[in-house]
Every structure is written in structure tokens, then in C-alpha cells.
Image 1: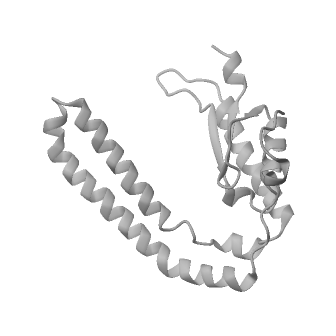
Image 2 (image 1 turned 45 degrees about the horizontal axis):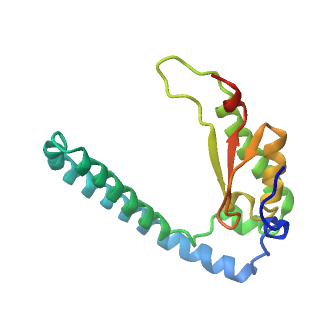
Length: 176
């Protein structure tokens, strides 16, 4: 594996204090439904505007691209509002390396099954690139994700380990 960053950045994140996680979880229980409703409202608003804009997009592909970029950006910002939320498994298993190892194995295995699936006619090709978010490997670090992925046939892509580990299915380069 060609590591292009300092290996110390690929280690596990420090364990967060239990009281902080409990407060975040309590806030998540209240805040996450609000974010879901807000996301649904933003999506509905874009769909309503999109129905009227459909007439214009017949003549302008530039408007369509701009519209889709604006919708994606707005939904990304709504999702960012919930980025501090803590789930129940995260609250219960903070600092438990075995839990996170199993979680990484399951996530990488799922992506491997998708990528190695045979291509079906009239269907989109299997994914060849994926991103494993920090939430999935927080307790074991990005280095463990890379080791598990390499053992299953993935290659490491340029990655910001503080956010995600990006992988490329190496068999896709050899096929077709």
C-alpha cells in the first residue's frame, strides 16, 4: 500500500467523554426529527419548483444543471445540520474496538459484494468506488479500514481520513 500521508493520522479517534455523548444523544433525539422534516420540506419545495421549471429545461440544459446543483447543495446543507448527532450504537460502544472492527468488516463486505456482483443487462454497472465515513471506523482508525479493504481487493484512493476513507475496486480496472 502506498501511503501518502503521515500514518499517525490514520489511527483511531480519541474516545469522547461519556457525558458529552449522552448530551449529544439527548439533543439528537430532539433535533434529528426536525432536520428530517426540514429536509423533506426542502425536497418538496424543489420538486414543486421543478415541475414548473420542467417547461424551461426543455429548451435549456444549463438551467437543468444549475437546478440540480442547487438542489444537491441545499440538501447537503440540511444534512450537515445533523452531522453532530450521535446514534444509540455510538453511545453504547464508544471506545469498543471490537464493535468497530465488526462494523468495518460488515460495511466493506457489503461494498465488496456490490462491486463484485456480475453486471446485469439493462442495469447500471456495479459501483467501483466507495467512501466509508468516519462514523463507521471511528474506534479503529482509517488504517484498519485500509487493511480490511486491501484484503478484499480494494485500492486506496486519495483520502481525508478525518472525514472518510475512499476506495476503488481494483478488479474494475482489469474487467471490460
